[in-house]
Length: 411
Ligand SMILES: Cc1cc2nc3c(=O)[nH]c(=O)nc-3n(C[C@H](O)[C@H](O)[C@H](O)COP(=O)(O)O)c2cc1C
Image (cartoon, rainbow, N blue to C red; front, side):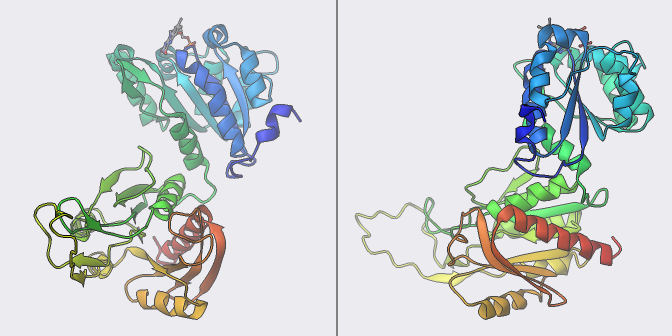
């Protein structure tokens, strides 16, 4: 084995057994291609690079040979590399793609290793992702617009560049890798499935700058949103206060208190009902009966008495507005035995299909930690015990369960 392949599968095994052809063209963004190749390998992919003559001038083949651990194809020979690699590929990724290569592919030109491979792969109906990078005027030129439109019409995925400093810059490499995973995920959800996730904590004002809240970090919800996105869902996030930041490719609506959460949810459920709703957000259970309209001064008010009242529960509105939505509810308990945890989880099944109740009092399961301990229970009273698993693993388990629920419902 080439020593560079030692990193294979170090992040996940999601792309195990997948062969990805990474085409690199003559753009300055070619310097990012080796890092993209390495990240795909860390998820288990076998990456083979094809370079255009201009990419060879800019980058040279050696760096990508090192990065992928595989020989780099820069020209065609009697081996018919364009056919051999197109047939054996699971996905062809062109990153970066120049305006020139995009134009050639659109018009069926096959005059170098990259364009010949792309035309062949398109003929075979392979998965193709094109990631453009160029000066903004090249991107805006009518010819490029039409070429990109045609490629999309033919089923090629073209990722939008980021317009910065009058350049249409290569999309974020992390986003490119996520998109590859999304296309090749072995547990892809049905096309067009909408998943809504709420995460983080809400807070209720005491005065204009002080709040009553809880310690939810938003980590569990974010892991669920990321996993749903990876499985191909149209994923949206409603996020309260959180210590984690969502990536830009997941549309996110911010909420502050329970009222703004209620309104956002009501609108979303009415106008765009999701197939699955993960109610991960930890609503601040209490709100002050009285809210001071200016900052309370500790000098004049050393003892502040705040009377708190429980806020109305929000979960019940979900099924009442959108009965067909599969609802996953979450509950956090503190230092209780499994039986009590189970009893409290069961209560939430009145408004949901699946519940995950965690005990944030157990070591490794605290708010904000990357691991969690608790109990999953579904409407058929099937119970799964979760013992110190990563929140990502639990997110994957919950998505498996909701996917089979959707199947049962014929969705
Ligand atoms: C240093 C340098 C950087 C370039 N960067 C880009 C770029 O980012 N995007 C682009 O479309 N063209 C860029 N070009 C122009 C392309 O290299 C040129 O159009 C070439 O014909 C592309 O060939 P290819 O598509 O076969 O790789 C650049 C040229 C040079 C010399």
